[in-house]
Image (cartoon, helix red, strand yellow):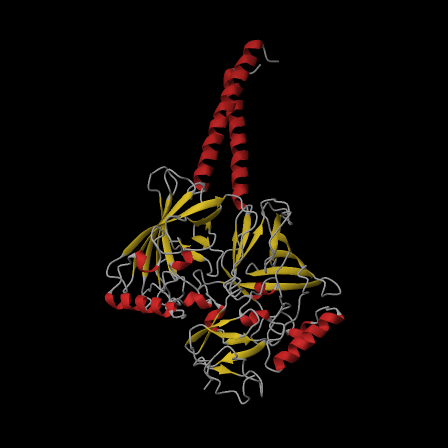
Length: 289
Length: 294
């Protein structure tokens, strides 16, 4: 028969056990999301593409990317590169300070990942300055406004079963705005703006300061899905400078009547190719200098 | 086997245990909630500037007054003239002292005027995501000192601290100071100027209205050499929605018709042809072109 002291002992033991469980749950809750704090810098394979950052960072930009483009879009890339060789902007809308959008926005120089249960924010430091990957369990909205970056829904996965999430899986859908290009050569996405992106974000198993973003692009300009592993190296400075890049502050390219021109340091209009005609000034009553 | 009295005693003890456990759980839960709740949880959602409909022209620093001269900014005589000249130039088709008209960033404080804002609060940093052409703001709350040589930016460098002003165990006020700027910047589209030395300092107090949970105040004091004294405005923002289906994406370049060549601004027609912005405006200098124009 149990006496009262035994009963009390059981009660205390039960309370302790329950408390430990509650404590464990609380601790587990706190540790559920990974520590991706800090500034992440895109890793570009050395010697493959100068200062520019390509979609596949292991290969040179443009043709060197070996993107599985359809013949129609191979021609668009060829024409873009030829136009740029002749002083034009080609198929590179970002040259006029239009948005890069997805996926080029993921090449920007200094990224920050702010992880909350409802959303993971990727802060980018360029004119495309922010992505929200919504992880609150929502369904795809029935109607969305087109954007350059698309609409991203993600979920966290505890792949190694250690009680902490280690992989963020995200899908980004349109309707997109465009045109968008993968890189400054004008490597095109389809003008129908119906791309879909699937991404897996995770820290490298062997290197806690290396973040992977494995991106697969589904796009009608491609003959098959195109997957690349973009990596980002953590800046170990605990208080890094966060760059502020505004395209219009440094942009010297303008387009008048579909013709690209440059402004020199004094702001005077310059041709971008040999024997380029000057802009049409029919609306001016005075004659130019 | 348990007899009746033992069963009652055990039941009673278990009840006590459960009660104790529940209380402990509540305490743990409470402690957990206090930890989680140390930072305000009611700043979530989408916020936009409160519009005072009685004010004729919107988009000013002080929302309760019209922009431009109507702001009654305490400008020095020199900067009153800068402002007057700006408005005269605008009247004549120019852009005046308003860099944002050609898609340059607004910077502080105008970046806090437009778009839909989101506050993302972490112990180290409060992020203000702006959804406009200006980028986000980071207010560092990790106890750091001012950096020695930060790169000047349009948004400035912000350090803040959280305060539990009403002593309820939860922070309710974020105090922030912002320095180290780039320019030019203007308070509003009339070209109401900040000093060209870019040495402005902003002190802000962010807090939720005590009686209206969907109003956030950003009490902003500007200390600037273009002003004869610090200028304070209680800038208010209304919560539009707590759950946001889609955040807008704003690009100044889309639809911007202003184009500056040399020191003159012109208009770009929808078909891409250049138009004068002023009566009898001289066309751009074409000295580098060999061909004659069309």
